[in-house]
Image (cartoon, rainbow, N blue to C red; front, side):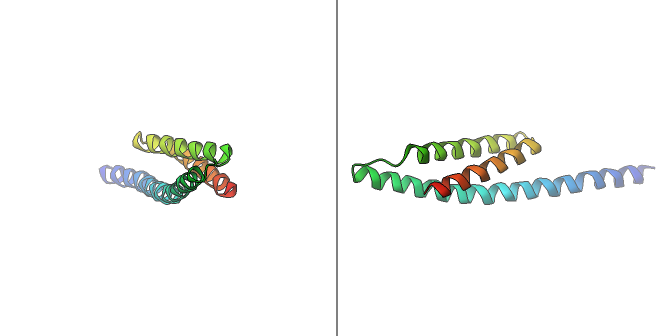
Amino acid sequence: MRLVSVLLFLALTVPAQDGQRQLLREFDEVTAKATALIEAVDGYERTARQAGVRVHPRISLRRLLLEAAMDDAETQIKGRRWKAAAEKIAEIRGHLAKLAASL
């Protein structure tokens, strides 16, 4: 009976751990892309400032939304709230696509 309990425990926890690892890989991947895009926007803003103009406010807003979603996802991951983290990662992907399309 004890062996069955151990096997059941392993069967239930190993896939969850694999799912968590996959979620962390997705978070790392999407935040790397987001960070690169944020750095590009920062560069555009510096160049625009030097030229005496500003980037469109929508671009700045989308960057801020992307940064906030990244922070929220990290908070969810640290709290081990995996479903909420997955939702935030999807939100990051959406903000990332919108910001990229704005450039």
